Length: 117
Image 1 (spheres, rainbow, N blue to C red):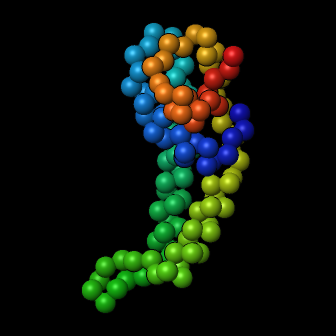
Image 2: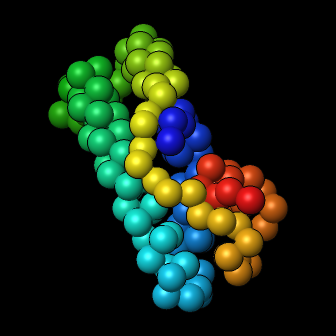
Image 3: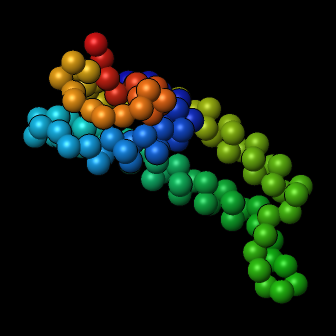
């Protein structure tokens, strides 16, 4: 499946909620496989974001690390470009008719990429 990184990042809270749902063993297995694949991409994103932040950090006279306003704009630009990346994730879409979930509509909208009719 092709998906933009920002779609995954924006769905973190809903994914956490999804992971706490009580489901059948079959549903739990399918969800776990999908969530593991997504988590791998999120781990790479976090590592890249942290490395990028370090690139723009400076040390203050007190020894604290900071990102100056000028560098903050450069950092933001790089992260926005990163978030626009399209990823290829190997996930089997889960038939929504087989799921019994208790979630809000807004949460479901952020994770709609996991399901099919």
